[in-house]
Amino acid sequence: MANKDILNLEEQFEQTMNEANKDDLQELLEEFKRNHFPNVLSKSAQLRDKYQDNKQLVELLMLLEAVSHAQIEEFRRSSEIIQQLYNDADSMSGNELITLGELAFMSDYKLARRILSDAVKRMETEAEPDRIKLARGYLVLGEAEEQLEKFTRAIKYFKQGLTYFQADDIRDKYMILYLHFKIGMLYSTKNEQKEAIEYLQKAVELADENKEMKINSLVSLAKIYGSRNDNEMAYSYLKETLGLIDDSALSETLVHAEALIEMAFYYFDQSKLDEAVPYYQRAIDMYKKQPGKSDRKLGMVYMQYAYCLEHKDKEDKHLAGVNYERAIEQLEKIKDRELLENAFADVIAFFDATNNTKKKRIYENKFVKMVNA
Image (cartoon, rainbow, N blue to C red; front, side, top):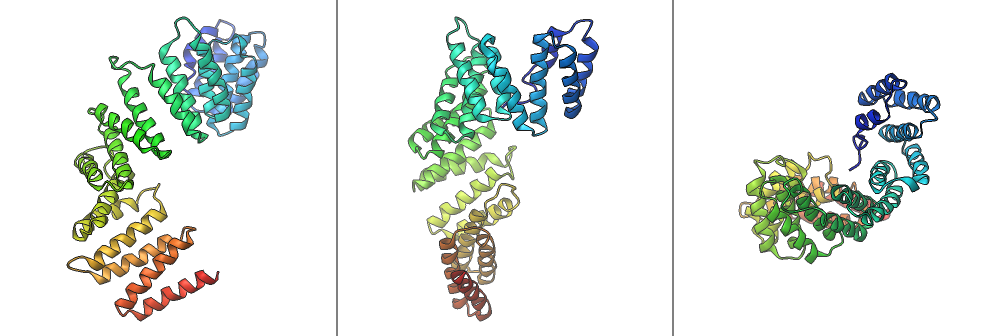
């Protein structure tokens, strides 16, 4: 969530500019805008020495350096600078601490959590806190906890952030939708399905004008119901998804491929193999192109597709064999011996039943080699 735009640099530099430092600061700002971060770091260090008596400017330059280090993936150095600024944070307002915490998120999740926890506590005691800034503090705090895999805490902070957005404010509507989806997905990660369904269904209701978020929520709901063996509910969500996705920005993406896989499995699980085949064909073509694909999942999909080809009304033994071999090729890439043993057994049985002695021997030898390894 944090990025180099958090600082509102032009506005902050304007507050510290005077006739003596104007040219230096404008030159530095131009280097930063051009993403010349090593130049920014060297020039900023010189300016800190030159204007060391101007505490406000020195602190701003240190923030600039923290961002620049993070941008060139020098995260440890960025974190050290932010920690140094936080050590002197007694005089900072809650607003300023939120900004510091957002910058810490770029390089150090634990430091971001510490700063933002302090920031939201300070802001909660203020008579009239900036609700959007406070909401942002809770959101980045939630993101930090999620990155640290503290999902219960992440949910807690996302829920607190949600309370600061107003349903009648058009600017807040996207964040209300986003947070319902986010909380639903975190509950799903924790396998707390009842709560996940509650938040994801609400996200679907809120997402009428946001097709992409609606599709993501529908696919997530379909997966949850599928894992509960509630096939008819899963089917209803998948049908709605596939009716929307071709004309959306998510067409041909990983989400699209996963929706097709879920629909293919629905028919597979119902033993409606002829109906499953076209979904498997399209799902595989799409899924194997995705950068985030899972070798395990692709291997299992090939196995199911091959089984459908072998056993559908008009069986295609040749194509079934091709896909059983593709399945083994994928499953050999993962470290799941039991899964691979079962896959070898099925493939050996297939080539035995089709009297393909050569292929049967190849996979028998692979099986023996794996067992003896």
